[in-house]
Image (tube, rainbow, N blue to C red; front, top):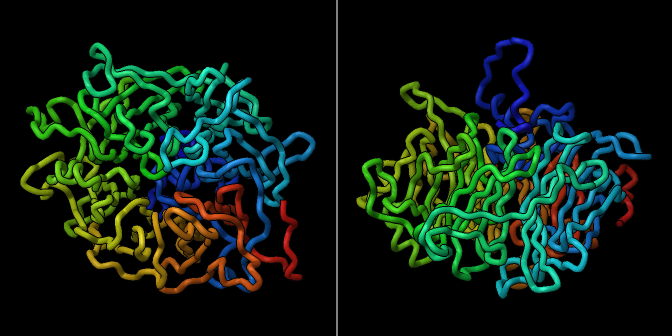
Length: 554
């Protein structure tokens, strides 16, 4: 596992963990402050759960005692999930809880997570550069800077390090992508960074020249969250709309040196197959395997003797990536039987991200190691991580479980969250659903759903709980597809989504309005507060003061 979650086996003590305890270990990491949020969706399994939240409860999250505390203003859109570290030593400030916020204006900020005070701000632009324009694509507008959620390594560098990918444009009109490693205390560059992102891979596909596929920084956006595994930073790349030529790339860097350690083009002899996942991060298991979903693109329906695509093209697929000796390779995969028709209709798997589930026992007592994901085709796929199912033109019967049309809307934001034997999923113009696991299989009908529907693109839920108690599902909505309205934060009882605890529109006199909605924002919960990005800042929510007064806006 990565440095967020691997430091748990010291002192020779043998401990037997239940599935819930194991997910707690995976999610909370090893830092003294268990509620650190160092990566997208809390942990590298991408469960979306914080199991150490002791302040927010089913009783006190309501419009009378919970609401907006203040808003933090920044210089651009906040498309990345804010991250959080507790009790960081800040010069002249002492130990502080710190909130890190990245913007599409190529800025990274460190704020006091409890008051909104700015500790530092750095621009990741070099002299004369600007953030990228929108490349004639309406997906990230009006500028492209830092889009993906960074990742933090508390034990790298003198004070801990945050890794960030930033896109920019120089005065000559050249586009640049860079990986930065920044000191948590000061925002200063570390490890002789930044590293300019360049890559090649053997192939004859759409983006190749003379038998070599070439990564063109103009053609790509780093949308999916960064992943840190075993001292390696993984970046994954998508296109701007469907502006050809492009492929799906994974490019890896040593976290200590920023030296490139591996590349993989998942459609090297074809086209497309982007990795965007609506901002969700690739996931990893305890062995360091990486799971992701690719968007529509070339898939070779003629298979080799091992059951893999004959030309090595994995568009529109659920992938398991192995990293060994600096080499990245597809270790296993699943591709729907109707991949050709789904490609033609843009009904791809890549609109959402995976969640690696804790081990479960099936009805026969066999341990199942599973990974889940939802796709634009409205299906929920539950795959065996040791035998994902590959491709069968006759049907999907080789996979562990498929919930056909389990979601009623198109899945543009197919990122499930997991908690205590439940899977929470949403689609556009549809409810947020709660599905239950029984004997390591999902019950086909949801056991509860929200009363409200979420408009495009749906919601990416997050969960706070104190162990198995006071579990709350949090979801943000942006209010509309092309003309987003006010952002809305909602909270639900995790055991019954029909029981809504809080809605930021309910407070009198617009007390809890906090900005304009943003398409792919995921709420982040830490130490009794909820942080939600908007088009120009972050709304901060928590328990209101007894006097009813609010912290000042900043």
